[in-house]
Image (cartoon, rainbow over all chains, first blue to last red; front, side, top):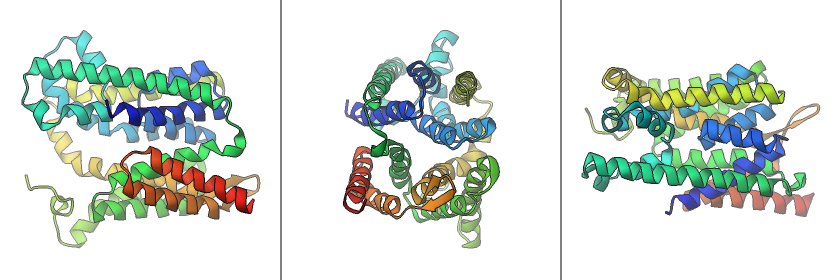
Length: 225
Length: 109
């Protein structure tokens, strides 16, 4: 389980930052089970720290988790025929790592039953290790002094994730536009600058290929459909 | 925010997240064209969100009298970028950035 080793530090950071925000252990665990999405959870924690508005935090969570819609579409042919009591928990367990493990070519060639049991095995293992990692983070977090500036691990984690998502020049430009806009729109109330920066980045990414006279797919290095 | 409103917030966020996860599984076949049309936006969202999330808190720190540019944090971010381009795991850029920040504070104060 090489991916579990990636879950552990991330869970530690989530748990410890929750403690740093003065959240009770029950609240942190409730949040963890309800979200089951580490990056959205860290983003929500950062926005809570900044006293962002309720709606802004909900919107941010939704936008960050929109990628699950792609995963949902990927697994739809496999899970749709199942009974509701399986379909709902299977949907809840969808996450980045389970998706990554279950869409590999050798998995695609197996029978539906094999693929479902493989998904269930990996997803449950990931869920359990995520929960345990956050509990560990809560336990450790209580003894971390404030001088360590643990809160800074949140933007660093996002920065590291950002680096792994930038796979071509267009995505780099999108990140630069969004990051600069976020800096200059800092002063707006209710963290509106944050939402506007995202919109600006995405719009830049949609318009630039047209200005350059190239199709979106060719800029992204994707085959034409 | 109070403890109760935080529970409310997390419940709403959790429910929304679950509905996104369930969307295509539950409505199989009905949302296909919509997904195809939204795909460019979905592909551009991750870098836009992550940049908007991480750049401001790295560049500034919140002080009582407003925002202050933090050179140490910016340099720590640069260290993290370098680490991120060499290692696949998230752990090393975070550890590298934090170590730099602690070292900088310890040396310069």
